[in-house]
Length: 196
Image 1 (cartoon, rainbow, N blue to C red):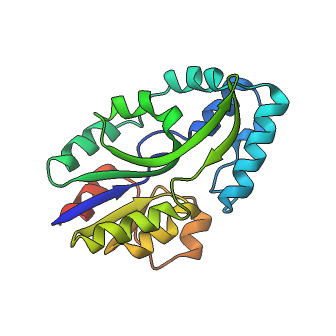
Image 2: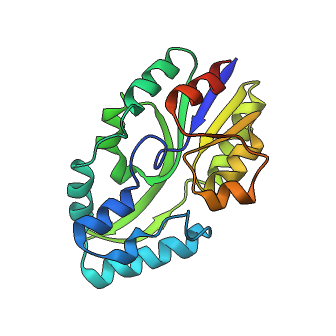
Image 3: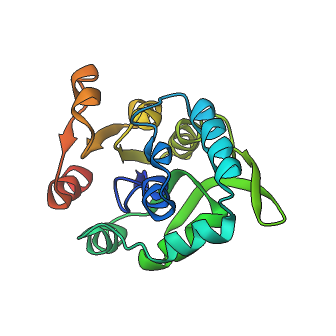
């Protein structure tokens, strides 16, 4: 039996932090794991910027509330869920994800959490270090054949741990550095990869 493990941002929804950057006028928040592969370094920088600019969780939720899934993502995930279980493995936060998961009909989501004090985000907590890879390994230990996709550096270990892994709409730099991993740019192609 197969299970599909999907990254969220860049695969099914736009990058949350880039939308926050635009909504709050803080260009430095545009950086993602495509730019800074070290997730802890990236998050420490983000927390410093949120504190410096006085950006609260409510402000971020307001931005997220105005976001929509990428064109075709909803149809893709509904079609895929008719074929196999789907797990979203994401570095996003449970405090952010509700409105976005609703647009995707609430698939299983494994992600991280935040510490919030008086509306301000003061810390972040990973569900598990390298959680995407561990989730894939756990599914494989349950005798699932795991198909996985993501778009960034933080997805590499997940893709390599899966029975079949592929990039979806990654930046060219990651493709050049990892030529052994297939690349897809359209949902129909990705669906065929998961179901063939």
